[in-house]
Structures are given as structure tokens and as C-alpha cells.
Image 1 (cartoon, one colour):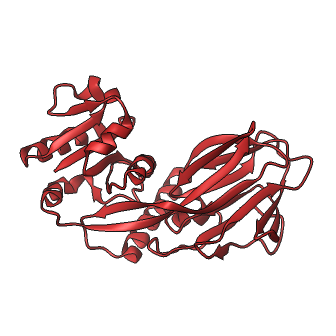
Image 2 (cartoon, rainbow, N blue to C red):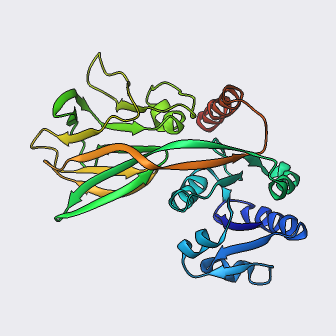
Image 3 (cartoon, rainbow, N blue to C red):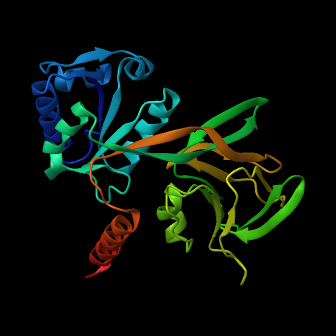
Amino acid sequence: MKFAVIPNLSKKDARKYTLQSIEILHRLGAELFMHDEMKREFEHQPVTFYQEIEELMEHCDIVIAIGGDGTIIHASKYASASNKPVLGINVGRLGYVAGLETNELCSLERLMVGDYTVEERMMLEVSFYQNGQKQTYQVLNDAIVARGSLSRILDLTVSYQHETVCQYRADGLIVSTPTGSTAYSFSAGGPVMDPTMEGILLTPICPHSIFGRTVVFGADTELFISATSQYNSDMILTLDGDCVAHMEENEVIQIKRSSLTTKLIKLKHRNFYEVAREKLGERSTSNESETSC
């Protein structure tokens, strides 16, 4: 069995748990690969290094991402393009999409005998034109259109099949997958969806309206988002936490179901509702502790 190991060393103790994971898998006879940028930290480990992340994906059977949710989501972009499953090991705070906690590394041996399940998660494809060039991205969690440095509220139009579906005056819009329903969309008042379902959620951010609720569209809906006011000269498009573009008036963002899916490995038999109760409860407790004096 061949594994691509992708750690986020900016996370506390990530290096320690990466070394432990490498030791366990190597002892079990696994082949281990890492990106060249990790050579300085892990050059004395039984690991083969590749210069390009695409090479890493091509040669592995399974991707192991060690970090928080952001690390796992980032790794899933490359893994989905190569149709490889991802196991996330949580060394972050929430770890909602992780398959293992750091005190469960002994369960890695189950990967070697195929004793695991794979959850297939819907992704979004986000496209727009800038400087005459089409830009296309794949998204697991969400696409967010929000105001930039100016504090003016945004006027946004959402269209489907050449018909206006929604018009918002708001700080922005969140378009999310069911997986992303527990992220920013949830914080903005959106519903929680079972991530194995399919659908597209549209949640306004701080809407200036009594009707500013989340709308859930079918998974095959193709949405177009555009600014409708001459004052919207500074908008930011953020995809899975990464700012990818500053948008201007009349630029249209197209969002639809991606042909790719993310395959998340699960080693524990826990249903979604148990995980949601535990993880969202952790976030609530964590937020309370951060804001208390």
C-alpha cells in the first residue's frame, strides 16, 4: 500500500504526529511519499520525495492529511483530481472532516487490510472571467462573495436559467455544499445538512432584510451571482478559505456541481449526527471560552 503524507507543520505537534504515523505505516510495510518541500524536516525518514504534488497523487493509493479541517480540505483538492481517497488526522481545533484523532493512530493498521469505509462528498465548480481569461476552481466547503475593504453593503443578484431567483442587500453570500453547511454557512444562520446528501445552499451574510434566509437548491442547479450596483467596486471571492480574486461590477460568478467528488476515509463507525453534536458542541464551548474574561 502506498501513502502520500501531507502534514501542516504550522499546527502544534503536527510534526510529532506525522513522525508517529510514518513509523506505524513503515513498520506495517507501507511505501510513503511526501512533497519535496518536506524534505528538510523528514529527510531521514523512510520516505520518497516528489517535486510535484501531481506526481505524489499519481503514485499513491491513499492520501493522509495531518492538520486541521483546512489542511484536509486543501489536500482533498489534489486527491479528488486523481480520484484518490483522503484520511484526515486531526491536529486542529475542530477536525470536522477528519477520520482520526491523534490518540487513535493505532487504527492506521486498518488501512493496510482495507478495513475502512469511504464517504463520497459533493463538490462545487466555481468559474469566472478575469482579464479575458476563464478561471475555474473546485470547492469542497464553500464559495463566499463578500465586501472588501469598503464598508458599503453589497447588492447581489442570484440567477438560475436566465431568471432572477434572489436579490440581496447583504455583507455577502455563502454558497456551500452539504459538507460546508457546518462551516461559515452554519455561523451565518444556515441549516446543517447531512454531508452525504446532495444540494447547494445559498446563505446571505448579515442580510438587510426580514426574508434573508438560506435557500437550498437541487444539486444540479447552476447558479450565477453578479453585483447589481455601481458602488460594488470592491468584492472578494473566497473559496474554501482562500481569497482567489477581487471582483468588480458586472463580473459574473458561475457555480455548479463539480464532476469531481472528495472521498473521505472513515475508520470509526460513527453516524453524522453524533459527530455533529460533538463537534458543534466543541465549537460552542470553545467560542465561549475565547470570549470570556
